[in-house]
Length: 416
Image (cartoon, one colour):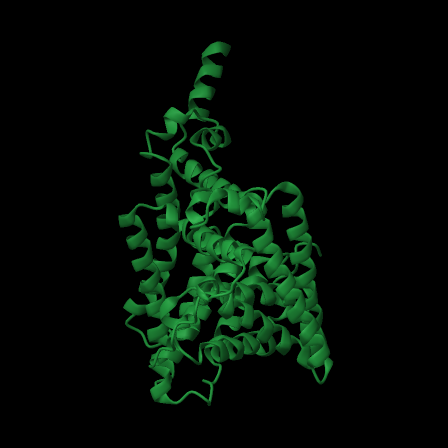
C-alpha cells in the first residue's frame, strides 16, 4: 500500500468508526449540557465529532431527535437497574442493592439529570411522554422497595423519600466534585438511605397526608402589585415553562414599551430574576446564623431557609437553576461566584456540625441535597400536600447529618 493509500485508509477509518453514533451522542450530550439546546447547532456537534453535519443526519433525523436519543439512552441504564431489582427472584435484592445498582447506572449517565431538568421541553410530545413514563417507573420501583422494607410508611411519605433518593442518586451530573467514583458511589447510596429512613413528620395525620393543600396565589394576581413585580412574575413563569430562548417580551401580557421602562432587555430580566433568588438566599443565610441557638443548628436554619424559597418561589428557583447558562458573561461570572460562596457557607456549617466529614464529602452531600430540593418542589402531586415543606426539611437534614461516611478504603479524592 502506498503512502497516499495509507493516508486515505486512515482518514476513512477516522471518519467512519464503528462507534460513530455513540461519539455523536456523547458530544451532543456534552454540548447540550454546557450551552443549552437552543444554543447548539448541528454544525457544532459535527465539528466536535470531526464529521460533516450531513454525516450526523445519517444517524439522526434532526437536533430534536438527537436530544431524545441522548436522554432515552441515558435513562435506559437506570430503568434496567430498577427492572433488574424488581425481576430478581431472590429476597437478597434489598433496597440498598437497588440503590447501589442505580448509582452505578447514574454515574454512567451523568448528563441525564441536567438534560431532563432543563431541556425536556424541547422533546417531541411523544418522546417527552416516553421519558416521563420512564421516570415514573424509576421512582415507582424505589417507592415499592421502600414500602416493602417499611410497610408502615404512608403512600405520600414513601413517594417523597423515593423521589428524594432518585434525585440524590442522579445529582452528580449537576455539579463538579473531587471524589473518586469508589468513594462517591457509597456516599450517594448512604445519603439516599438516610433520606429514606427519615421518620415521617409527627404533625401529619394519615388523613392530612392525602389531602392536597390549596394552591398558593400567584403574586401578580394580587391587586396592588407593582408593574415591575408583574413583569418579574410573568417572566419567571414563562422562562420556567418554555425556557429563555423560547420566550419573547411580547408574551408577558404587558406592552413592550412598558417592559422597557424597567428592563433593558430579556437578558436583563433574567439577571434580575436570578439576583432576586441570590438576595433571598443571602437573607435566609443571615437569618439562620443570627437566629440559631448554637453553631451546630445553623445548618438546620440554612435548610429551612432554602426550603422556604423553593416552596414559596418555585418559579424563581427553577429559573435560577435551568436558565443561568443564558446569562450574559459578566452576570454569569457573578452568579458563579455567589453560588460558590453560598455552597461554601453550607459546607462550613455542616462540618461544624460533623467534624468527621471532609470538605469534599460535605460538598457532595450539600450538592446532592440541594439538587433533590430543586427537583422535588417541581413535582406537582407532592408539592400540593400541606406537610410537604416539613418532609423536605426532615429528609434533607437526615441526609446531611446522619449519612455515614464511607471508609477510607472506599476511594481517595482526585486531588490527593
